[in-house]
Length: 214
Image 1 (cartoon, rainbow, N blue to C red):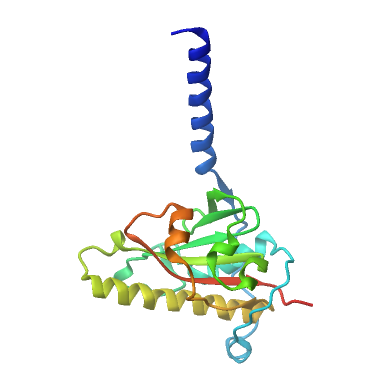
Image 2 (cartoon, rainbow, N blue to C red):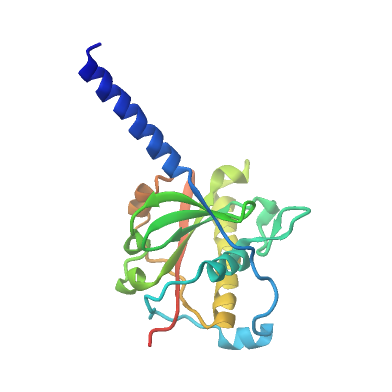
């Protein structure tokens, strides 16, 4: 092997290793603040869908609180979540799109794992306002976690479990003065490709979150 070929091969290996390491990089989240907020009945009275968002960044602490409220672990001894899950499958993963990258929420580690760098918010919904929200969530059902359940049951329960999670997000936003709306109009084929999802992973809904537009 000539020196030139060796150098090219060596550089290719280094670049591949760097890319792989970058893909597995995680960002630790602050410990979620699980006290405070508006009383439940007040949050319910304020819950609504809003399709206007300020581009103001959501602080990491608020994002941590939001994701914990959505589907975080509220019983560490059992690993169970703030949202119910059929047969405790815990099949719904939350992908978090920001202007910088798309992340996967790891509830156990309370961290964000980088899935893909770059701004993919516009791919999380077909409406123009989606790309203006500082955070857009995508709820992805991993059917491989649902065992031998029938396909119709997987479809039904993953949709139901996503409803629980998205409602938690609605109530958190109502409590914290944030805007949100759940979206079903998504190019799922395109977004699945962009996120590198497996065939058994199905995008159910997306949900932009942000501060009110002034």
